[in-house]
Length: 528
Image (tube, rainbow, N blue to C red; front, side, top):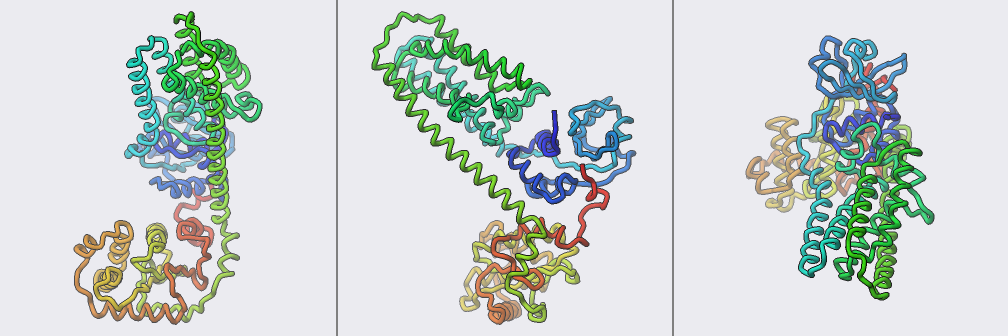
C-alpha cells in the first residue's frame, strides 16, 4: 500500500521506465521547501533531467491524456497527488489511500484538473547495462565453475549444487542492494509484482536482523560464496555442506512464517533464496553421503568462512559509509536550495557598484530588460567554466524571458592562433551578426564537445578586428573590477558564494524572485 507522496512519484517513474535510488528520491523530495506540492514534483523531475509538463486541463480533454500520469485529486475533501492509469472501462488510482478502481465519472468528481505527465523513457540501454552487468558476471561465473568441475570429473551433485549456489549468490546480491538502499531495475520489477510483495519492507524489518548487526542477507551471501569457493577452489565435494544444508531448513521455515505472520508481505528475492537452499538440500540428500572427508577439509572450510566474513564485513561498512556520505550530501544540497539560507550568504560576499557593471560591450542574452541580471565572466579554455556556462544555458532555457545574462570574456589577446581567442572572438562576431540566441548556441556547443577543429569549421576561421576590440574591452573591464580568475558569476551586486553553482541558482530563482512563475498559480498552490 502506498503511504507517502514520494512512493507515488517513484512508482510513476518506474511505470515510465525511469529508475532512481528510492531513498535519494525520498530525501530530495521531502527536503523541498514546497513539499508535497506539484512544484516540488516538477523541481525533482528537473533535477533528474526528466522531461515533463504540468498543466490544468478541462474534463473534456480527459480521453486525450496519456495512459499514465499524475493528478491532483480531492477524495473526501483531502487534496493529494495520485497516479492515474486510464484503462478501457475504468480508472486505476494509486495514492496515499492505496489502490482504487473508479469509473470515469467517479474519478472526474474528485479530479481538480491538474496533471503532471512525463515522456516515457525510450533510452533504457544505460539502465539495462547497470542492472544486467551483475547478471552477466554470475552467468559467466557459473559457466566457468561448471566447466571446471566437469573437467575435474566430479559427480553431478557437486556441479548442480554449485550452480545453484551461483543463483543464490545473485539473489543475495540483490537482497543486499535493497538493504543498503541501492536502486535496481531488477528488484523493482520482481519485488512489486502485486500488493502482497514488498522486498524492501521485509528486508529492512527488525526480524531480518541477527545479533552483531548481521542480516540474513549477509549470511546468504557468505554461505553461497563459501560453497562456490570450496567446490571450485578447494575442490572439496559438495557433500561436505550437507550439515549446513540440513541446518538451513529451520531458517527457511522461520523466514516463511515471519513474512506470513509478522510482516504480512512477501519478499520474492527471499523466497527465491529459500527455494535455492531447499533445492540444494534435496540434491545433497539424494546424493551418495558415504564419502568420508578429512578433518583438514573442514578446517580449510572454516578458515575460508572466517576470511569471507571479515572481507564482507569490511566491504559492507565501506558501502554503508558511502551511503551515509551520500545522504549528507543530499541534506546539504537541500539546505542550499532554501532561499532564506542563500540570501544572507550572498550578501556576505564582495559587493560591486551597479554603475561599474554597465553593459558597454558585454554580450546580453535572455531578456535585456529583465529586472534580474546575472553578470558573468568566462573563458573557453577554463575547465570550471564548462559546467558553469552550461548552467547559464539551462537557466536561460527556463527563465530566458525574465532573466538577463550579461556575459564577458577574459582571454589573452597576445597569441592570434590560440583556440581560446578564436572561440571567444567568433562568439562575439556571431553575437554582432546573428544575434544573442545564435551566440549562446555556438558557445554552448563548444563547452559541450570541446572539439576545436569541428567548431572552427562550423563557425569560422578568420578573426574580425571588431571582435578583437570588444574582447580587449572585456579584458580591461575585468582588470578594473579585479576579476582575474574565471568563471565569475555576479547576481545583481554580489559575487556568487563559492559553495554555490548555477545548478543551485536554477532551483533558487523561483523563490528568490516571486514574480517569476513557470506554472499556473493553481498548480503551484496544490498541496497534498
